[in-house]
Each structure stands twice: as C-alpha cells, then as structure tokens.
Image (cartoon, rainbow, N blue to C red; front, top):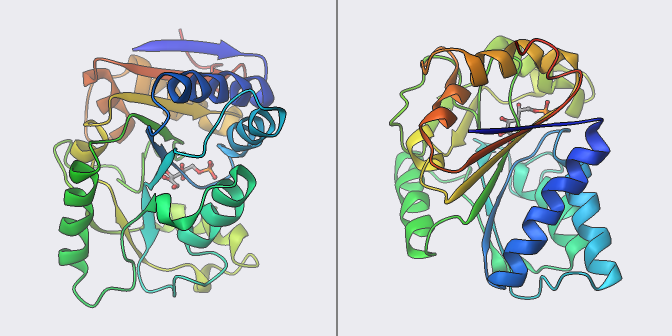
Length: 243
Ligand code: F6R
C-alpha cells in the first residue's frame, strides 16, 4: 500500500485527477469507479478542469457506481445515480449510456446485486476505483464487520452513517434510507487500482486503522492492505494519527 500525504483536499483532488487522466490517455475507454460523499468532490472538479482545458479526453470513458440507496427513486436528487449525474457525468460531458450502477429500486434486490457484479465483470472490470472512507472505516457501505470477501449485496446503514449522511437530506435523519446496495469488499478488491482519499481530522482514526492496523473486518478499509495496487491519499489532518 502506498500512502501519499498532501497538504490539503485540493492537492489530493489534483493528484488523483492526474492519475485518472494518465489512465485515460493510456486507455481511453477505462472504467472509472466513483464514490459519492463530500471527499471526492475536489477530484471531480480537478478532472472536469482538465477536460475543459483539453488535457484529457473522456469521450470514451466509462463510469461505474460504488453504492446506492435502496428504495429512493432513481430521479430523487439524493439517489447516488442523481448525485453522480450532477457531480461527475454532466461536468465531464459523459452520457448516461457510459454509466453503470446497481438498481436501488428493483423488487428483487438480491437479483439486482448479482446483476451488478456480473455487469462489472462483463465490462472488463474496474480500472481505477476511487474510494472515500467513513469515520468508522467503511468503504462503499461495507460497515464494520462486513466480510472481507463480500460481493455486491444489500446492507443496513449504521446509525452513525445515517447521522453523517443526514446533511444531504435537510439534516433530517428520518429521510435517510436504512438500506443500501454496495459493492462488496471482495468486489472492490477486484478493481485494478484502488485509490482512497481521506481528508480532515475526523478521518484520522479510520486512516490509522486502515494503514497501520491489522487487516480486520472491524475496519473494512484495512482490506486495502491485501490489494497489490492500493494508494491512500490523505491530507495532513487525516494523516495526523499515523505513526
Ligand atoms: C459513498 C461511499 C462512502 C463514503 C464515505 C465518506 O459512495 O462509498 O463510503 O465515501 O461515507 O463520505 P464523505 O466523503 O462524505 O465523508
């Protein structure tokens, strides 16, 4: 695992956007796995700036979703499909035809999870998966004690994650869904390159457990230690509890 400490979130965003740009120059139809939440926004802004300046061509790039709320209509402004359309696809000028994600509204949720794992394999696998990390060490929505071999499946959000995400629902925790579909840890580990970005002091404990703790299901992100090509990009605040 490679750990890169950057001065701030903007620098982290620039570094990762450049890694994505280099991948796309090498492989124009690369499949980029993207996360939602606040942390990756500087990455998406930096990548969109590169597209606008002509530094990278994303016309053939493909985008894959990491997780999705169960039961929110796809056109709900806070469904992750909507969020990614707004924050990633539209700024990059990529159409929904180049996007793949799990169906959070399917009646057969288990079937939708299996179909998504198959879709990722059929697409040739994720080339670069961008990850954020929860304060409890979750990646995707694999909360603590998720199996490190897990596949895409339905999970129940912890109270803490629902509290953390209430800010996207007018601060009202009752509006935050209880369930999500998330790529499993085993699914995430199949991406060719994992890039985790963590910023701010609130992530410092989770980063220390990820990088320096044992590989253990209590800290799902520690599974990155098992991956042959994992990069953890942290700002100084998030790195503050590393030895
Ligand atoms: C979202 C996701 C989550 C977030 C994590 C951190 O797609 O996969 O694991 O990355 O909850 O969220 P922020 O970045 O908002 O602190």
